[in-house]
Length: 277
Ligand SMILES: [Zn+2]
Ligand SMILES: [Zn+2]
Image (cartoon, rainbow, N blue to C red; front, side, top):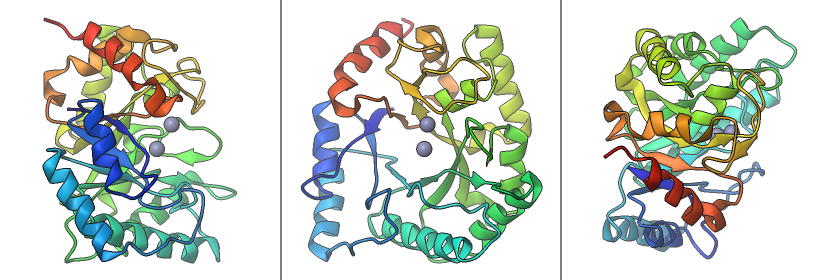
C-alpha cells in the first residue's frame, strides 16, 4: 500500500487528488500548519469535500501527521498543557476528517529522565483519546536525536502499555529512524532479527503504518535526516526488505523523502525496481 506525504495547499481535498496522480493507494497530510500552535477550524464544506475525494480516489488508511511542536514527554507547564490541548485538537480534526491514523512523535525528555517522559507520554494519550472517536494513534519510532524517546521497541511498548485503550494505539515504523537509531534493517538477517525483536516487544499487529525513507545518517548515528529512496545509507537493500515483507502487505507505507512530491516519481521507480517477482 504505497503512498506519500502530500501538500494540502489550496484546500484539504487537493491532497487525495495529488496522491492519485502518483497512483498512490494512501497518503499522509498535516491537517494544520505543523510549525504553529493555532489551527484554523476546518469549514464544513472543506471537511465534506475531503472525505468525498478520498472515497472517489479510493484512498485508504490515511495518516495525519501531528504537529512537530507537541511534546507529550514534557512535565513542565505551560508546555504540557499546550501539548495536551494541541494533541486533543489534532485528534478531533483527524476524527472529523474520518482518517484512520494520527501519527505522533512520542516526545522528548528534555531536562528530565527518559522514564518520566515515557510515563508522561502514556498519561497524555490516556487522558486525551475521546471515547467516541474512531481515529487511532500511531507512535512513531524515533531516531533518538537529542533527548527524544521512543528509539527502542521496548520504550514504545512501555508507552503503549501505560496508555489505556490499547486497541486504538499502534506504531508507525519510520525506516530512516529505525536504522539511524541502530537497528540493522539493511541486511536480510538483520532485518529479520529486527522484526523478531519488534514482534516480541510490541507485536506485529500493532505495526499499522510505515514511513518509507532512506537515511542520510549512518546506522546508529541517531540523525533524523531523510534521504531519497536508494540514495542513502539504508539503500535499496534495506528498502527492499521492507517492501517485500508479506506481513506488511496491508500496512500503508508513506514516502517522506526530502524532495517531497517533486521526488516521488524517482522514488517510485526505485521501489518498483526492488519488488521481488
Ligand atoms: Zn514523523
Ligand atoms: Zn524523520
